[in-house]
Amino acid sequence: MDFQQLIVAHLLAISMALVLDAIIGDPVNWPHPVRWFGRWISFIDKRLNQGKFQRMNGLFLVLSMVVWCFVLPLALLIALYEISYWIGIIVEGIMIATTISTKSLGEAAYKVALPLQKGDLQEARFQVGMIVGRDTDQLDESEIARATVETVAENTSDGITAPLFFAFVLGGAGAFFYRSINTCDSMVGYKNPMYEKFGYFSAKLDDWLNFIPSRLTAFIMVISNVMHSEFTAKHVFSIIKRDAPKHPSPNSGYGESAVAALLGIQLGGRNTYKGIVSNRAKMGDPLYSLNVSHIFKTVQVMKRTVWCTWFFYLIGGILIGITYTWS
Image (cartoon, rainbow, N blue to C red; front, side, top):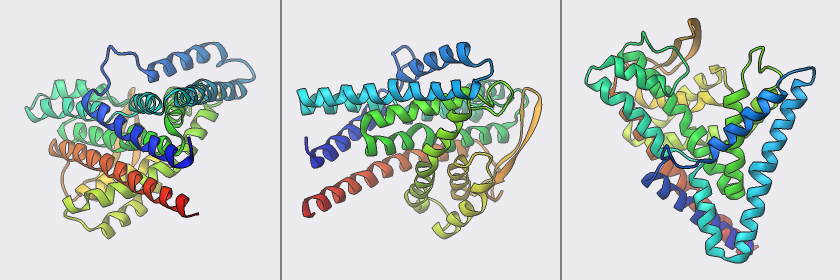
């Protein structure tokens, strides 16, 4: 398989993955690689997150993910492509589909929005508690909407466009590897006494892997949604430049500030975690009060961003292929 065939294979696999995810999503009872990643991480965590060498043990966890979630999937795909070009594409497409969550993220947001729309705060609080880590039992409509919008905005990159980026660059094995490190970070990448050392390499590698995808996602988010916003691209980019660096994460602020600027709302502020107050930097200007409508609007922002990302990679792949032919 030459370089041009490889580009075409990746683009077809990505296209197939997006269609599969849009139709099927992530059925709860189906086997899923992220659950396998989680079991392995928990297994290592219970046995090696102790003693004097916690940081090195955390490095072992990361290296084990490289083997299980990149080297082995890559070897499998190489073997399948040797057997049949089309079998390789189909399996790679299925692999990529398991790493993205467009449908499930939208459904999770709607599970919050629909009861909130009916005034059922208790059910809305329960549903938002399924997707955020903050305390939800006292949240009003505005705070429930904010929590949901922030989650969708952040996970547009983490859960969809970042895996697609690595699928475009490194194929299905790259998407698998990204999701495995992202799962490591979500499980052990905390700055607390238990995980500060053990989760150090997981958190750092996740930050490095997300550096380009988070910024690229914010850019595509703006160009794919600015026609549906009352604000200019120049205004939105100025808000991103101003507010994204304020976020405690070096990457998460880009998606959140982009959504805030596009919708004319303010994200961030006061959150509580197990009764402990945490004041997060504010993103965007409060031109409109947050309400349930902003959840629906954010899901639409997410969907437009995902399909524009696909188009971006399609055009990029074609241009790379043409350049390779002429070289």
